Amino acid sequence: MAQAVLIRRQIVRFPWARFLVLFILSVIWAVPVLWMVMTSLKPEAQTITVPPHWLPEHLGDLTIDNYRRVLFVPRGCDLIKSFGNSLFVSVVGTILVVIVDVMAGFAFARQRFPGRDLLFALTVASLIVPGEILLIPNYITVWKLGWLNSYNALIFPALAGGFGVFLLRQFMLGIPRELEDAAAIDGCGSFRTLTLMIIPLSRGAIATLAIFTFLFFWNEFTWPYLVINEASRMTLPVALIQFKGDYWSEYGQLMAGAAISALPAIAVFLTAQRLIIRSITLTGIKG
Amino acid sequence: MSTLDQIARPQEERRAGQVRARIKLKSFIPLLYLVPFLVFFTVFQIYPIFYGIYVSLTKWDLASAPKFVGLTNYVNLGSDGLFWTALRNTLFFVGLNAPLAVIVPLSLAMLVNAPIAGRTLFRSAFTTPLMISVSSVGVLWVWFLNPTFGLINHYFGLIGLPEQHWLSQAGWSMFAVVITTVWWTSGWNLVLFLAGLQEIPEQLYDAAKIDGAGRWALFRYITVPGLRNTILFVGVTTIIGSFRVFGQVFVMTGGGPFDSTRTLVQHIYESGFRYFRMGSASAVAWALFSIVLIFTIIQFRLVRVTEN
Image (cartoon, rainbow over all chains, first blue to last red; front, side, top):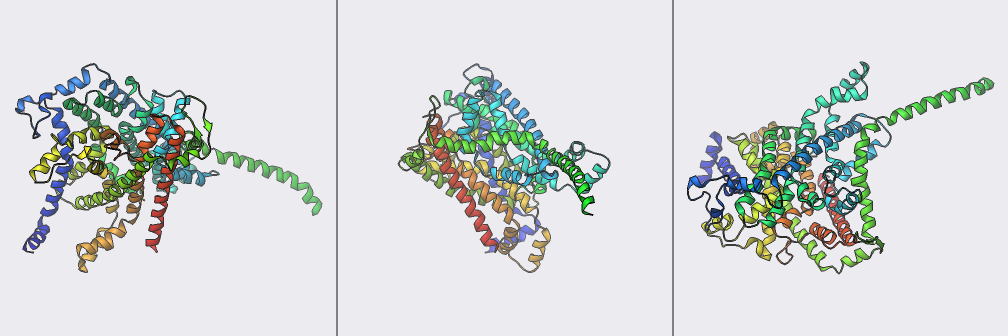
């Protein structure tokens, strides 16, 4: 009882209880990632110890040798090549998704044409179809097109996703129509309206979509694992599993590989985090 | 009058017809913006739905031509023991993961929403795992959960909890997968809840506090109603997402031990691409889709009921 009173009085000044709970929880959340980084920096001989230690025996033993070996020692899968594949697919894929979805979002939000509402309803309905149930028919399509083991198979099916169209349409609906009417009076056609007005005004939502899409391509696992089995075309998540299969006991290198594939995505997200939360509020994607 | 009319009408009609044709043509121009999306949407989203139904009605190993077998694949599901195991495991996973994946992020969001020192840092700690691909997550947690040299059992030992063979014990493996998943995915729902919380006007809380409302009352009568739409969205997407569980089990346990973590998507994957039974794999996919659809409809109904 007395403690509860004490805590309540302290909250008025600084919310210590809340701070403490948050602190403990965020440490728990961070531990696996920190463990990954620490293990990747230990010499292989010291990665497995009973009981486990955070630091190597001597601080001087910390090494980037695991990174060097996982990247530069030739073996079945080439992580540098995979890094390049991941980067290519993520960047090109993101650019294409943004172009396709901006145009489609604009059409749904700002244009009138027969069948618009039906098509939009279909797009929204497609959001609840779990992608996994399309694995088999889409695999067969990609196989018939001769796209197995190609970038096409990784990029083009992702352009069918309705999420970005929905997000941008919702955002563009919120742009005042008067602006557009004024532009029309000045003789702007729909294409110039889109490029000179709608796109600049939607850049927050577009940036958010671009970040989500990049992360999606960067981290996607099931589909690339299915359609790519040539080592030279593997993206990082696929190559990592390959690597795990071949070198499962080399934990230091395994963790270095995991870190290499995780850190770029973490960096992208952390720099853009505030933007993402703001535009979720603006676009109302959460309902 | 009638003669004049008769003379004038065809001309007028013709002109009106031309205008109408022009309007009609013009009204299709906006469709051009939609064409690129529609092409991919049709080929990789609409067509595969129907093609999947067709495939589920055939026996097909991709090497020879598909053979139409009617509903045989669906009927055979009844006697496919692995299908039922996978269904049971998936429902178990959804039942455990979905509530946790809503409650944990909601609590975190409420904790982190108030102005507090280090807030951005805390939030980042919870959202960072989301940025890691499932293969890294799996590799990391297998190591982390290792019974002999993993950190978890070490700390369990320190605070006096019994050691667990997380991934090699049938009873514990799914719990390990759920813990991993909650750790991995909570950040996403946290971000959605934060966005929702920021839309609730601060004045509502102030007014209620003046009226002497306690914390529970504030939560029950202001936060929950204010987050209604967010909770619906998070609920629906989390349940759908939980039914899709695959990568974690595939990387961490391979479905074992003793099929205790084998899920429906894994069953689809393996019947399709390990045993090349496209037909029966598609039938499982359709079973999964029907279940997801039923759950989604029930949720929308529930929300409508509570609304009234």
